[in-house]
Length: 408
Image 1 (cartoon, rainbow, N blue to C red):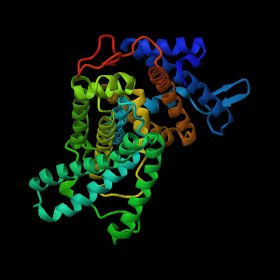
Image 2 (cartoon, rainbow, N blue to C red; image 1 turned 90 degrees about the vertical axis):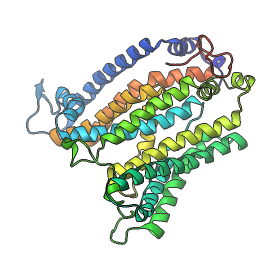
Image 3 (cartoon, rainbow, N blue to C red; image 1 turned 135 degrees about the horizontal axis):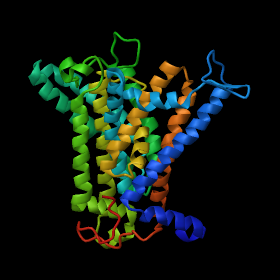
Image 4 (cartoon, rainbow, N blue to C red; image 1 turned 180 degrees about the vertical axis):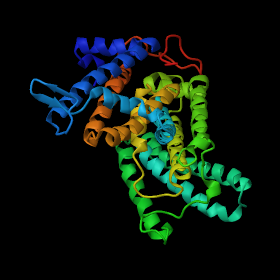
């Protein structure tokens, strides 16, 4: 589809989103958040009208409303900060989504839709677990073992994820295969191959589940703050994710490689005219994206489970939403992942404290994410179609063109 095929009113709307400044886009996101809360309150009231409860919070005109929107939103947004367990859960989710959100953002910046972050995460997690189990036989216990095994596990997870990400990159670059289709299918390949390998060759004989043996305690990312001692959150993992945000931001906005990626993603013809090696860039972008997803898998194994187990949560797919919320900007991934972490932790509190059905909680989360993400999603569509005035016209070896869309 071309921009000329769209009605003029749609072109104007997309153009206004494309040309919006960072401040205007933040204001749009905040307005969308409040709009989602208002719509969600109506949904909560309607659901409470048909529910059965002993003590309705409101009786009006012969009708009883079981659910209080204020209490629901209090549990959703405030409860993650009220006790150590909820806070640790929120920070754990935020940490994992920092990695997968960055992974998807890198690919999107290059004009590639990496829907395979989940598969790259699964393989990265398995590679990290097996590598640490193997390496534990050659290193001493104690601090030395931690200093060797933890970085080793993280690096192996990133390498395995990067190699798996290279597969759709090579297919896209040299066979013109649609990366959306290939990455989606490779998710299923990764899940089933990993299941087969573990159940056949690497299964813990003492367990009834399809899982590997536990990695040694010295190789696990343990909490360093006393208040989180009994939780599966490590501040070291969070700090690593934040450091990667800075690294990826610098790579994208302050190096020639990052500039070529961004120009290729917005205007491939201009990038080709400037001498960019499109095939190499596609493969390199997918390798980097896959490496970040694989790193997320390694963190999941070393921080959360301490082993590889079938049924890894869909953190890779959640990373797509985080990236869209962040407008594919590495710095924006931090608040987007934090919001997602709050929603995940708060959702559990709603179910436990108020007895609200989990289906309704899922609807509320979906509404918030949908409302906040849609403006940025349509902005991405407008950029892809060439609508608006903020379009780059050339590439010059890494120095941004004046007026280009840098999203800084």
